[in-house]
Image (cartoon, rainbow, N blue to C red; front, side, top):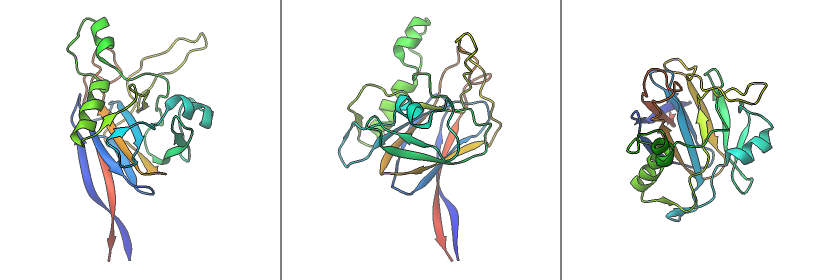
Length: 209
């Protein structure tokens, strides 16, 4: 009998980021541990080089899926329009933003807190932990669990993430890739509830019994 078991859990502390390698055909799950937490999800093609260039592109993905929010079965594509991740399960309310750029030092400097943690810096730090660097400007991420509705007049809402503790979204890699998840440190708007909290990245294994 072959059963799927949880072989690895990487906890992403609040306001920080973590990177993992995922092989083609492998799955991983992003879990909101406490609820109401946004995760900035980045992915890069892993071709064995230390400088990563081909990356998941939210703008190209919007054109590919023709959706504002991704759904189960959708492929996320790169800036070269090649599939990199597929949504295979989602037990969250299904609000995953494809519009908003990663928060960065310039964003927080404009808000009067120049030394604030940011998803852009979390991305660089997480890649550095694997001995990698991004060879492109900070890509626009897929903001899992983020609820930014667009009103009829075109204005954007900044609503708290609608997730409950334990809600998750599961992806399958359609090519070898490096995935980074940042537990968004934004605490100047209400997107992360009362305060930022941790996420987890689960990678299942296979138990042959």
